[in-house]
Amino acid sequence: MTYQEIVKQAQDGFLSADTTGFDGDFAIQVDIIGEGEGSFYIAYKNNTLSVEPYEYIDRDAKLIASADTFLKIADGSLNAIAAFTVGKLKVEGSIDKALEVQKMIEIMLKNKKKSNKKK
Image (cartoon, rainbow, N blue to C red):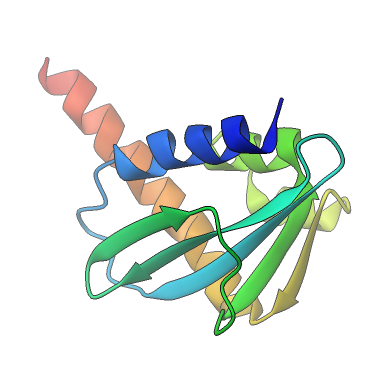
C-alpha cells in the first residue's frame, strides 16, 4: 500500500464518519513506518475534523505505527491501547490527547451501529 492510499483510506474513514457526541479536541500527527512510510495528521478543533497529508508542527502527540496497525485502529478492529501495550503503536507527546483519537473512533463506531439499526 502506498502513502497516498493510506492517507486516502484514513480520510475516507474519518471524514465520512459521524462524530456526534465527541467533545474533545486534538492535533495528532501519524507517522507510518515501513511500507507506505510518511506522515499525516488528524485534527479535531472547534467541531471540525481534518485529515491532511502534512506534518503538524504544533501537534499534541505523535502516533507511530505500521500502516496495517494504524488502519486497524482507525476501523475499530484493533484497540489503540492494546496496540500500545504490545508495542505495535508508539506515542510521543501527550498520552491523554492520543487517547482522544481512540475515544473518537469508539463514538464513530457507536454512531455507525445506531445508523445501521435505523435502516
